[in-house]
Image (cartoon, rainbow, N blue to C red; front, side, top):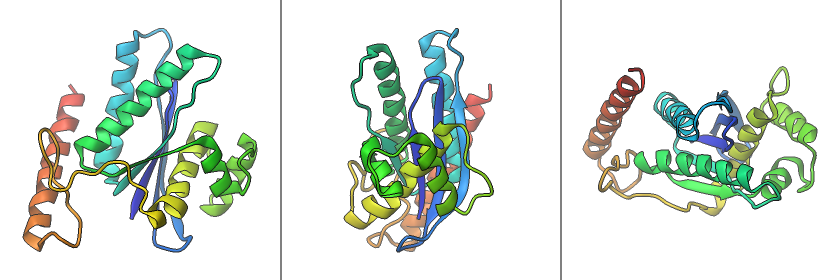
Length: 207
């Protein structure tokens, strides 16, 4: 299965896609960072991040989305904007009927490094080793997004950890394209619906 990991942030939002083939076998598919400039109005910054999330989900076609859980810290403004971006990631997943899982930074570090208090540099190094990359993913947001995806592959998938999934679509939602309960015809129809929606989204966002 293909997993999109999201490290939410308004200035930089890490987006890492891996392929999981069972056990602890994972492979790098794509990694990028959605960016927005601080001088822009908040709504425009969120729109830039949203557009990048839509583009990534349409092009990469993940089967699941894993997002870092936001915790309150001293900087309330930073927490608020990070939570807004996390909400966008969950919204984009819901629009495509994709399962969503949330993980705390400690859970991610423990899964990838074996230490819930690992430093950023340790996470980058372990992600590089696990995915057999030539160099560490940079910036740290990129490495974190891959670590979140790996955490879901190694923990969430095996435990069936999904916080939301639409069965056959609903209001403003795309139909599910995979599952043992779907017939080949249902799967074909659902994939066609998703492709049409993605083409429409790309056209709208390119205007």
